[in-house]
Each structure stands twice: as structure tokens, then as C-alpha cells.
Image 1 (tube, rainbow, N blue to C red):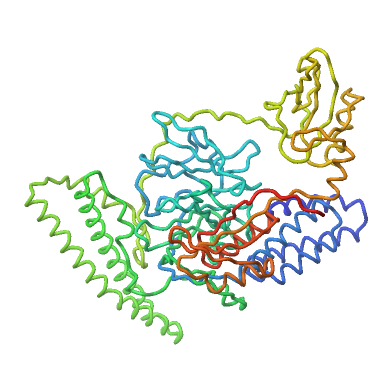
Image 2: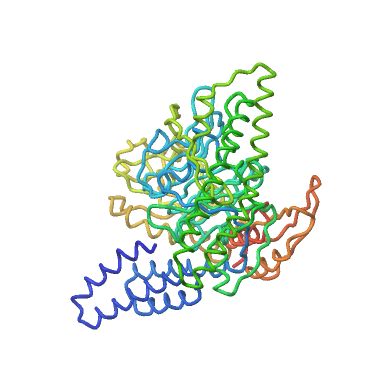
Length: 627
């Protein structure tokens, strides 16, 4: 939305040139306010940025600009709300990569990233979404691709015998007006992680997780993963490593435009989230500085996925790579120590000398640990070679060393990033989607009959066109869609257009129909498919509302809810009935009832932010309520 403002405000300035200098100065003040507000939002000073957005709104009368400013203000409001649920993780490593190939340094299966463009997504111009993760043996594929309007959505396709099913969107929860990128399944297949620039967030791409609802066979409403995973910058491509040790994601916070930092964080099954009011403390958490702890040094994580078909050979290859990486690490540390000693000899400033001495001491403290790790890895490698020799297994040293000589980054940190090979473009046959009939009222180049003449349940209005003895040709409807046909017992045909849920909605379209030549058209009403007088329908509409009722099911990891869960619910909707039940050995807390779907979604997001991953809404059906 900030980019939109950058385009909108200069246009407004040009328009105001014809309205006197005072208007020009006011517009420039608005521009300055917006720049300051955006900067404060990105510096996590959400409260002050909101006040500046309010000042900009007071000085702006243009409706388009006001919508853009209100959207930006909402990002700050969201950020302020997220400061109540902040997780402080243990950061193992951080390393900077190019946006063009950063994904290849994730510890995922080799040759499984399929760069764009390809048969599934022909657009290679996205600033961050560069490839689809598609291992050879995958049966269900989630990927992102642009729709007809250019927004990037998440699609699913399933492998059949020789083809893949027609790609389909997941559900309304996982679709926004902006982009959703890098969908990644958890190792157990129960959680879908992705990034979105259009869902509830604080700017740029935020990270989200959706949980699979086995009862409904659907992905549930996504929850923003909150701070520090999400930020006012661009955060994307989140995974948990299969060994359960690490969470990894990328972010461009504090990065040049052509690069991202990849963060490695110790995985927490039950992260503790707390409110953070101090901005300096919040910035420190969001900076995600890696810890300086030898115990957390791990070279094997980057090697674990290099497993050829022969598992024994793969184990040997990984061990060779580990030995090589450890040798590289020791070399890097020795070079670092030597360079700092040389600078210490030349430097006369006391503070700088102290800093260099501390760095030398820290590097020297690491060396024994690295040397012990190298000794152990070399011994393990020798044992594997002796075992192969004993079993008569022949090795191809050139091929194994090619695997071991892959590009490795970050060897001087607590984690080594090994570059995987990109895969080839997928050579698959994808079925074409079967288009579903769109029942939205439209005027098209050619009219269309409704695919199904059955009216939906509840109160419905339609615009009746005419009643004829003979069935007309579709061209006589002058572009109206959908047109419903009813055949009376005497053989006469009645035709009605549209499906409207309120009288005012039907009324807003009847003049369009009359202008097409249907001057005698009129509004008619139905209740559960039975025709009723329009006056009765309008009276019913004024007195009653048909709403869908929901409850929220919360399944904590243990028997009790986290301490922050109930306060989070009460903060959004006041006190609600919370019932505790046990089903199939699982403790379930049921919250409800709700008649506001938007509020339900907010509560689900808030509960997930308190550390409960398994939370989902359940529809209880519709109910007629007196207004």
C-alpha cells in the first residue's frame, strides 16, 4: 500500500496546482506526514505512526488517498496489537543471500526447487517468489501462481496416474486481494506455512500458518505467526526442519533491495509469547541477532538432505562434506585471528584494541571445539570407509567429492548453509479446470441461462423480465446473466434475472435491466424457493436477519489453555462461555456462540498467537434473528 501512496500523492499534488499555493503546501505536508508515519511503523513505533496517519487524514479530502492512508494506518494498528504476543527465540544463525537463489540454501531435498517460469507459473517477474518446491515423488503439490487479475494465489494440484488434477484455490480464508507466496507443508502435513501481503499484517509480506481440519477436510483460517517472524518488512519462506531442531525463514529487514537474510532459529513446540511495551527491547528482539554459543554449532544440518538412492553412500557423502566444512571453518577462524592480530599491532586506540582482543579471544575459544568436531567427524568417516571395504563396496571418489564440494556459506557461524542444485522445469500434464457457473448478476456481450434454476435457501429477490408462450433465444436477453427459467403447468415460460439477497440490491439493478429494453421488468421475491409478496419479503427483511452461528474449538497441546489465551479472547469479544470437553482422548475447549464471522476469524488469529496451533471455527448452521 505504501507504493500505492507514492504513486497517488504526486498525482494529487499536480491536481492541486490549479487550486492555489495554500493547497500545494498542504499536500506537501501530507506527503511528509506519510513518509514519517511509514518510517515510524517500520521502526516499530506504531502508536506515533498512527497519530501521524490521523493527521494526514485530517488534511486530505480526496477519497482515494484517504482509503490508502486508512489502510496504512491499519498496518500500524495490527503491529501494535501484535506487540502483546511477542516470542523471543534463540537465533542460531543469520546469513545474507541474493533474492534470486536464497531458497537453494535451505536444508531441503536436492534438485527439488523448480525455478520460474514453468508450466505451473509462467511469471518470472515477482521480486521474491522465484521457484516452486516440487520433489519428484510429491503426490500433492501446493504452489503460487497469478490469477486473471495478476494477484498471486495458492493453488493445489493432485497427482493422478499420468496427469495432475486441474489446479484449484484452497478456500476463501487463504485468498486475499494481494499476493500469497511460498506455500510449504510441515513435515507431518498438518500445517501449511506461507507469506501474504494482503491478509492481517503490519506491512510487506507477513508469515502465516493454516492448520488442516481433518473433520471438515479443509485448511482452517490462517494465523499471522506474529513477531518476530512477521515484521513491517517482507518475511517469507518459513519451514521447520524435518529433524525438529530448527525453524528457518527469510526476511529483507535491514537488507539492500537485492538480498535477504535467512534466519535459523531453534524450534519451539510451545513458544512463550509475552507483551513487549519497550520499543528498544522490541527492536532488539526483531533484529534477531544470532547467539554466540559453541554448543549450538551444527554443520550436519546443512548436509542432512544430500542422500543419493544408496543410503550408505549418502551417509558417506554427508560425512565427507561435514569434514570439509569443518576444515573450512577452522581455516576461516585462523585467518580471522591472524587479521585481527595484525590490526591490533597497528591500532593505537584503546577502545578498538579492547574490541579486537575480545574478538581474538572469542575466536580462539571456538577453535578447540571445531578441532574436536573435526577429529570426531574424521574418525566417523574412517569407520564408514573401513565398513565399506569390509563389505566389498566400491566408491566413486570423483562423484562423492563433487557432492562434498558444493558451495557452503556461513561456515564461520553456528550453522553451515549448503547450496542445493536447482531442479529441471517440471514436465507434467495438468488437466484444464472446469469452470464453475458464476451466479453474480452481470451484463455480458451475450446473455446466459442459469446452469441450475434452483433458488438458494432463505430470502431471495429476482428481477422478472417477461412471460412467454414460446421459449426465446438466448440473444433476446441482451447480455443478462444469470437468467432463470420457470415452466408453468400450462406450458408458459417465465424468465427472471439475478439472485439478490436484499431488496435494495435488486432495486439498484432494475434500472440497468429496464434500460436494456425490459421496460415492464419488476422485482419479485422468494422464501426458500416459494414465491411470496414483495411487501411481505421487505417486512421480513426489516424485522429479521438470517445469520450463521459459529463456535470456536481450541485444542491445546496439554489439558490446559495457555495463560494468555482467555485474556486474548476477552480482549476481542468480552466474556464468552468456554466449555471443556474430551473427545477421543483430546481435551477441547469450546468458545461461543458467535454470529460475526469477521470476529470469529480475529479470535482464531489471537488464540493461535498465544501458542495454540490447533484452533478452528465450526459452523452451527443458520438462524433467523429478530432485529
